[in-house]
Amino acid sequence: MICQNCNKNQATVHYKQTINGKHKEMYLCPECYQQMQGLNEFGWTSLFGGLVPNRSQVLQCKKCGTTYDHFVNGEKFGCANCYEVFDEKMDQILKRLHGSSLHQGRLPKEFQTIGKASSFHDKLNEHVKKVSKRKKDNEEFEPKEDVSNKKSFADPKLEKIHNKINVLKQEMADAVKVEDYVLAAKLRDEIKKLERKMEGGENK
Amino acid sequence: MITISTRVRLARNIKNYPFPGRMSKEQAREIVDRVWGVLENLKIDGGLELVAMNKISEIERLSLVEEHMISPNLAANVDTGVALVSKNRKVSIMLNEEDHVRIQVIMKGQQFKEALNLAVQIDKALEPIGYSANEKQGYLTSCPTNVGTGLRVSSMLHLAAIIKTGNLNRTIESCNKLGIVVRGLYGENSEPTGEMVQVSNQVSLGQTEEELTQLVERVSSQIAEFELQLRHKILKEDRISVEDRVYRSYGLLQNVRRISASEALSLLSDIRAGVQMGILQTVSGAILDQLQLLVQPAILQRYTGRTMNPQDRDVVRADMLREKLKIQK
Image 1 (cartoon, helix red, strand yellow):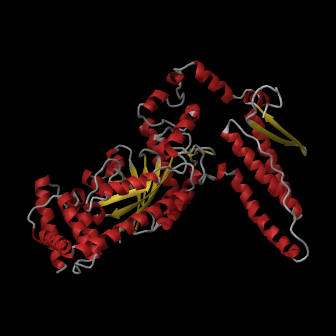
Image 2 (tube, chains in turn yellow, red; image 1 turned 180 degrees about the horizontal axis):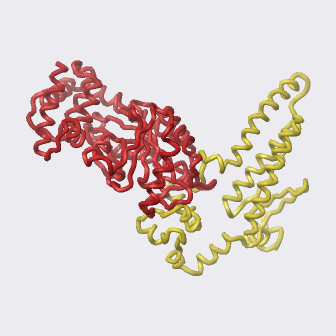
Image 3 (cartoon, chains in turn orange, cyan; image 1 turned 90 degrees about the vertical axis):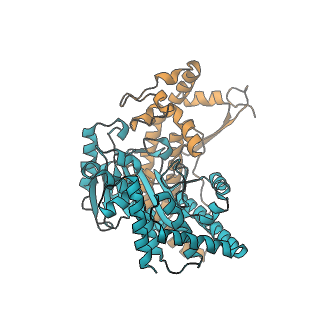
């Protein structure tokens, strides 16, 4: 398929967006997708990474003094900040070591935005069960409305937040269905918070 | 009976401090004060006792290593290393090792879920201290091999038949393909002592704590099953050779006048297998577990209350073994 923006290159990105209920769907080439997203930090660093081959030699954590070369030569990281300083290399290193660069397990409470939602989720599940029991005899359960939108991201952090927003939106729709407006309002606030966070991340 | 013990370890670091490799002595002491401030009154496993490496003798430090309560690394960090050890020795929390905090739980036999639950319980109790973490990479550790869950689940397996029949390398290779590491008892590059190996997860990122624990549990059970099949097979094929080996080892341990730790451990391995295969009935599993510890150099010296050179130790070890195995007759 040809890119729907420049009509020249091969489209490799399927871009879907929903703003205020309006759906927008496009097939784009990587260049046009990058343009649409604006050149984010990731784009710049990989550009520089290609131009300056020895960039790793000047990568140094200002907090503890560890350089990337220290690390390559078998030293350990000096502090938590090193993970941010060497972020550009981290995904590659972690994929090699663990076959993955994304954490799936437990997290401290302060990082659990999705954890908060899951307590709503438990509550919500109870409601859904009750209502579906009532409905079962009379009518078929309505198929769920798809409120998600799929989008690919250069930054996995953003992708994670985006996925969380989708989950919360689905939960909000369910909450409205079972007429739990208190829960729905809480979910709406949580979604707004995450959306602001994401905008901040994309405009970096 | 093949799985001697189960161990779970969680690596954690505290926010706003450099990792131990780049920390000042003052900061290391602050870490101890802050962690102890939270855990001092913890009502888990009979409560914890603070053991500072600079307050105990070298023999005591090495005994703790031989008991697997602390790592050789922590024992070497005499200045600032601290272990918080529970009364029944199930829990040991190492401070200022490679990471600020390493929560370790050891349980007898196969108790994977129980050990993970206890470690997580302690982790939650300490969490208000503020851990270094982020959503993408999980818990941050000084070595990226531990990042994510910070979890290492391991089991200690007695593989007498697998090792004697030359099947260890084959077993190690199949384990590696499944993301499981097999090594000697004292960590990387150590040789299997007394035919005991440690089986643990290779990765700590990208899977949940439960998934990693289940993986180690599943592979450990499969190795144990293979070991049992092999024991059954060699017993069926050549019972007299197996019996001869077990009784020779038993006879040696009851009569030696001088013996090294590694020889004692390898003879004890034969006896343990013999007891489990129903050949020897006069020795209890409890005494074997006790001897397994007592024959080791530092624990032997702590037990006898004497500091000795290796030659004297070999004589005292032989005396101790004869005495202990006589009671069993």
